[in-house]
Length: 514
Image 1 (cartoon, rainbow, N blue to C red):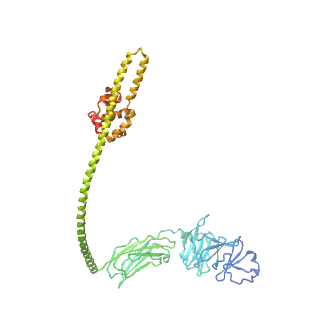
Image 2 (tube, rainbow, N blue to C red):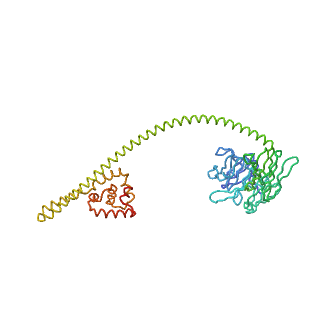
Image 3 (tube, one colour):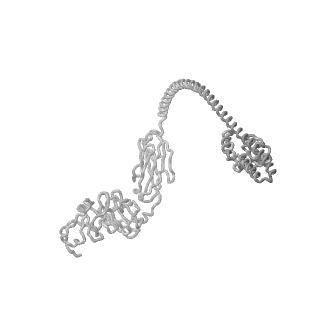
C-alpha cells in the first residue's frame, strides 16, 4: 500500500468513511463530529475538513453520525433526517423513513443491505424494514429481537450473502440470520395456563392443566387472597422473546405493560369475583387472543349476616320514612283532588250549559240556512218548470200556426225565430252551476260526491240524479230537461244500470240516501 500524502490539518481517527454520489468524503467521529472533505480538496495536504455537524447552511447542531442510504448521505438531529445534496451542496429534509424510524439519541445504527432492506437498531431493539412498493417508498416493519444486545455497540455491520443468509459480526463470532424464513413466520400465537398456585403457608398448587383446556370457576375462602399464575405459548422459539400482558377484571383498570415474564402474581385480593385476562405476542409482534381465568374469593358467613342486618335495617328505616311521607302525600293529594273535583264539577256544569246553548243556536242557524236554501231551490226549480211548460205550450201554438200559414213565407220565417227564442230560453245550462252550488250546500255535497265516485256518467245523467234527489216527478223532470216523459223513463232505466243498482232497489230511494 502506497501513501500518497498526509493531510496535515486532520489528525482525528477515521473509523467510518464514506463517499457520496459526487465523490465527496464523509468522516464520522463519535465525539468530534461529522467531517466533510469536498472532492476537489481530497488530495490537498493542506485541506481543512469542515465539521459539517456544527458548521452547516441550516445552522443546526446535528448528531455525530451519518448513515449511508441508497448512495446518499443521511444526517439527523433529534427530530428528523436530512439528505445532503451534492449539486446544491445543501442538506434537505428527508421524509421517507419518518413513519418508521425516530432519529433521536436512541438510534444506534441504520444500514441498507444489497436487497434495499434497512436494518436499524435503537435502545428498544433491532428492526428490519422491507420495501413493499417500488415507485412509492413504503416499508413493512419486522422486530428482530433475536439479535438485540448481541451486536457490538458502535461497530454494527451487516453482510448480505443472499436472501436467506445475512451475517452479523459479534464479539463472540458471526451470527447467521435467515430474514426470509423469519418474515414468513406469521403463525398465530396461543397462550395457555400451565400452573396456578395459591400462595399460602404452605403453598398449594390448585391447577396443572394441559394445552387446550381453559379453566374457570375456582372458589376460595377469604383467607386465600394471594395467587401466582404461570403461562406458556405454542412456539418453539426463544421463550425470552415472547411478551405477555395481563388484566385482572375486578382489580385492574387497564392492561399491564408488555413483559417477558410468563408469570402473574396477585396478593391481598379482597373478597369478590375476578377474571384474569392474558395475551401474548411473539417476536414479530403477532398477538394472541386473550384467555380468561375466572375465580371467586368468598366472604365469611358472618360478614354476609352483618351486612344483611345493616341493609335490612336501612331498608326498614327507608320503608318507614317512605310510608310516612306517602301518607302525608296521600292526605294532601286527597285534599287537592277534592278541591279540584269540586271546581271541575262547577266548570263542567257551566260548560255543559254553554255548550247546549251554543249547539242549540248553531242548529237553529243551520236549520234556518237550510230552509232558506231549500226555499230558493224549490222556487228556482218550479220557476223553471213553469217557464218550460209555458214555452212548450207556446211552441205547440206556433207549430199549429206554421202549418196553417204555408202560403205566407214571411210569417213562417218570423214564427221560426220565435221557436228559436223559446228553445234557447228552455235551456237551463246557463244557470246550472249556480244551481248546483246552492244544491250541494243543502244536500251535503251530493253532486260533488256523485261526480267523484261515478265518473262515467254523462252531464244529463248527473242532472237526472240531482232532480231525482229533489224528489221531482217525471213530468217536472221532462219539462226541466226539455225531453218527453217517455225519454225520462228510458234515462232512468239506463241510469240504474250505470250506477250498478240492484233491480230490487228503488232508484229514488237510493239517491235520497246517497
